[in-house]
Image (cartoon, rainbow, N blue to C red; front, side, top):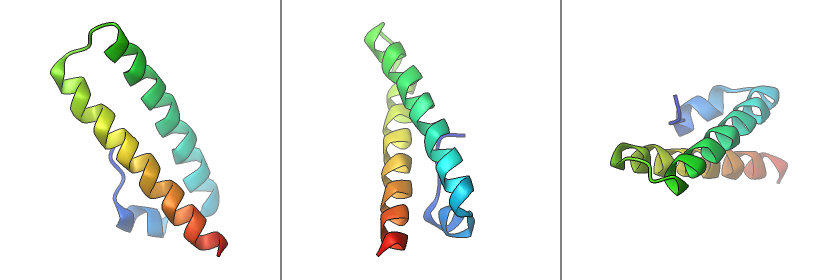
Amino acid sequence: MTHVKSRDIDNMSDEAREARLLELREDLLQLRAQQALGGSASNLGAYKATRRSIARLLTKMNDKKE
């Protein structure tokens, strides 16, 4: 599952957010490798969703710090 909703992020603990962020970054790395090797069009959707999920997590984590 690469997509993470804001509602799900709100219900996560800080440790769960960190773990999910690491998992999403690993997924993104794999998707980038597939894309570089000429991946299919379905990978483009997963790539975009993963990037947005990472951005959502980082935004929520930074909001908590303030």
